[in-house]
Length: 292
Image 1 (cartoon, one colour):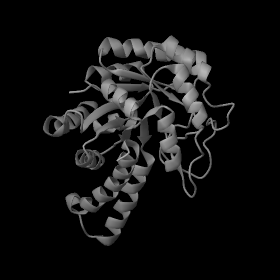
Image 2 (tube, one colour; image 1 turned 180 degrees about the horizontal axis):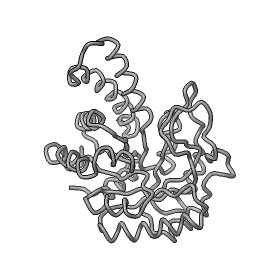
Image 3 (cartoon, rainbow, N blue to C red; image 1 turned 90 degrees about the horizontal axis):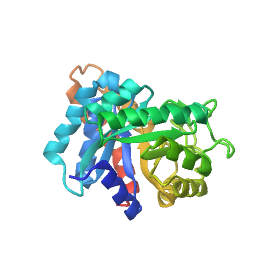
Image 4 (tube, helix red, strand yellow; image 1 turned 60 degrees about the vertical axis):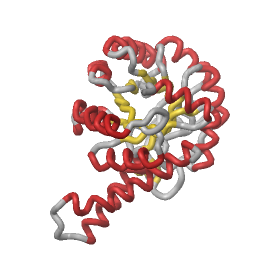
């Protein structure tokens, strides 16, 4: 069966991107897996430090593995597991040691010198725990929460002078040894309540990919217009993160179900429509990113 790195390289060749969805409960995992199986495409499941603490690092690994054991197909559906937004070496080593396919070590808020040093330590720690796990570094601050915003988060890099520079990306990759890079290119974590997110700097993405020499990851995909997604993938983005939009679908559909069935106390009886709402979000992005 292909490794995550092999799937990423194949995506680059085909000018498509792998979808990355964060989960915090079984229903989100089910929705993602159902659509991935239906479309027969690989998907990355992301769990941040907080999500791993809630889910249980071993439990989320085992649940993901159970889908792969029964449904994974060579060249098609498979769930990969990413330790998203990890800030401690201990948590990074833990995830790699129990079998995660990738670890995002996120020190993007730090000054570059500190970010390089901390990320370099994380690469060494993860590779010591697992030679197969990929390490992703983040360069540039794009906010830190999957929320519905009324205004741009304080300190987020949305002006050209604050976004990731190609020469900085090249240095960062060279000195840290990361396998993947998440740059700040106009993207933000979360989404806005009544407007699309800021537009992406497509030319910058292309320049960063050429300078860095490693696959690029686009965080903060919720709220980005489709036109920018397509252009970003063509320019060098290989993985796209979606979280807030899936959470919003879960929340809205849950509220609707509870309002429609105020006396229902059996979770499994109200979950089907909630799953359907989340599957619609997943399918739209999987089709767009995989050009299906």
